[in-house]
Image 1 (cartoon, rainbow, N blue to C red):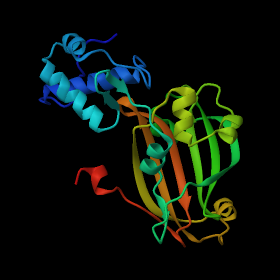
Image 2: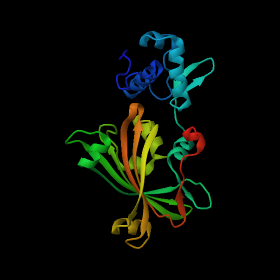
Image 3: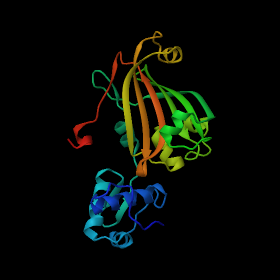
Image 4: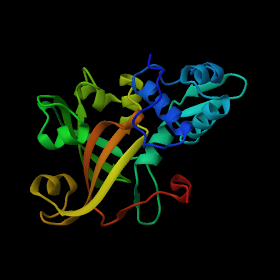
Length: 251
């Protein structure tokens, strides 16, 4: 158990921010699992050598970010994210008339491979590390809209099989959480345009060379640990990317 405050926050950061990062580090190390209660505030304040007020401010921020959840009279628990929470927070492709819907998914390819230099960089993996690499095609309202190429570190998803992906009852991120104890809490997305190569053109049913939206995403668990690298190609003829809502950005 690590009782020290985080040394990764910038010099001069408020004490509560250091406490927040220390709690995130404990979550990243698996000290408390999804759905479990964290220790009482008095115990945590003693552990980190801070006042109850400082500890409470750190916990308040983690609760506002839906990483922890308070239950009146019972304590504070590690959040278990629901299907709707994960899906509509991280899936941002909607029909141009504003219709939001769940996609149907078809798994086209699954394999275990040695991570490329780019994948190692994105997932902070050492040389020689292996990843699971798979491709999904997603349809909305009967329209084939998106092709996803996904890489997951074998070290975080030991024993993953194509059956896990084909037979999952809910979203990918729910699978990560429920089967492997990996909770995605944030993503970093970069958008650009690209031209459809032959493989993606066939998947999406568009002519080769058609303009597509390309979304490059790193998904993070606690303490900014990268757990997924994904590149999505989207046919935007009838669909578009929805940016964050004001309540998600704090604006």
